Image (tube, rainbow, N blue to C red; front, top):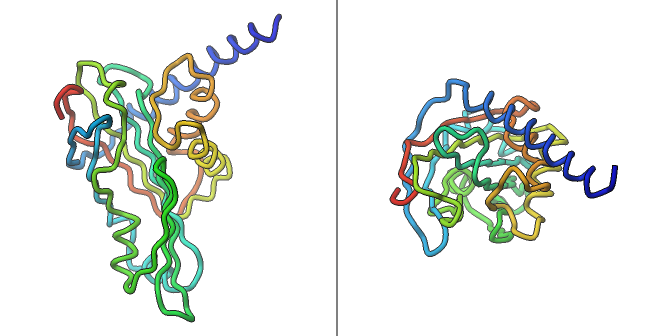
Length: 218
């Protein structure tokens, strides 16, 4: 078998595996949460809050001086389809700087990396758990039809496979938000891990689905 043929078989196999995992994940009972959606110039923009990721125990850990990491994975899926049409990733690292008595926050997504220093825990948590007009999908990837967002947020995930996939995704040429398709070899190589909510452990996880919306007019 030629190298091209091997790659084609691998891509098809990966697509079948991804579709099976996607079907299982989307078949699970997931609560719905209202998400504000609007059209930007080129992207579908989502405003989402998941402050409940932090409970009292995790807030106390935030003040320990150790880094805490919030990982957000958002998939856009058309109703009746097994695989998502787009994936978006965001990571937020936060810790309390004991000597200077400020909270350091480092955010990375497809737009790049930012850092800030904040005075209170509430401000730091808000930076990590509130998205305002966050691009989740390219408008060109949304054909007419009904869609919804699947949002998975984890606090301190420990799965090395997941974290490596996220690093790979964020450093891809198109960054942490890109359309995907069954013939996309990059898609096949990471998405089986990326969309699988059962792959590893984390301190806390919030998983919910948005309301349905029309791909042409959210």
